[in-house]
Image (cartoon, rainbow, N blue to C red; front, side):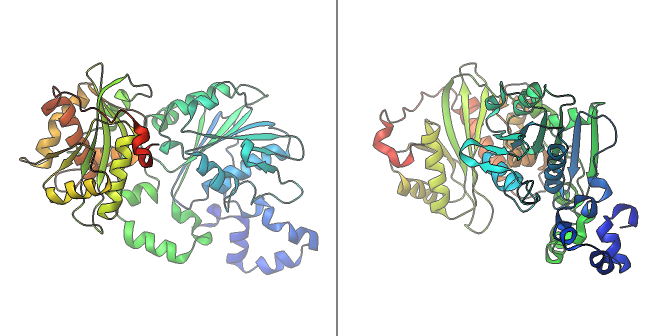
Length: 438
């Protein structure tokens, strides 16, 4: 890394002048040094110097995205340019644990004299100068309907399940002299990210994990290099490359985005599809909940895939069955059909199970389902990042696609082989099975 990419402090350390720099400070200045972002930020972490509407930071893990977002919020509050702020994360826990209370979150990077008061029960931060921020989860887009803000920080927007959350955030960003948002995220080629990259009022900052190498554990850096360097996931998660679809994959991200919905119709049938792992220490057990709508279309409702013991995946399957009021469980019999049935029955022997056997290869089984996606007959209710990554990246020579297998089994049951079967009635009184009621 050259000097143009380093922070002031990194340059002082490299030149051997850091000790003299600190020695020249007063005791008060030295006490506040760790809160002086001008000293520690790298040029890539400085806000662009033009009148942008959105500052999109697409960067690898460990780049310093969280610190950059938190420091930008702090500066806007300190200078009186923000008074009503929205903090939006992938989930409520992410907002609390990363954006507010995390090691690089707002509370940690603010000195005592400026530090806001955080009331978790009200999802609210209040600064001494009266500025206020409210925490929102992107899992609940409707909470963003109505409130007005003059500033926002949106974290990991490429991982938001409901794109509508971004729309609702922008609708409410309408007060103040210059309402703006900083969006910090590891890149994924989602429709939202592509739309932002096409806008003229979006400033884009990119960077890799290795840009922040001086502030990261060397053990972490070495492990990332050993495990992911040169791989597709490494290009995305470390080097922040926005990767296109994989040649030979059955699904394309544009197809999934074009058919996505947040408001499905009523369901005629719902099944929980399971692709059991060969061992507890090997692949994941694919658990995907799918439904057949009254419009005759298929809907992916949930991805509950787990990696664990038979009891763990059996418990997750039964929980999904009751949570979605499903008609039955559909499970692959090739990986020990008797074992699968016994595992599920051990957890709850009242749940109806249909065992299915693979007579064709994975690719051949998946092709008819992929064709239905292209015809606009299957929709994802929200976004399922790990499932969709697997769908758009898996080729026949790749590892076993457990999530895809579960999806294909479920959709085959609803849309092809079992589409005319009479629905299996869920127990009328879910109170009788209260351990699984969610």
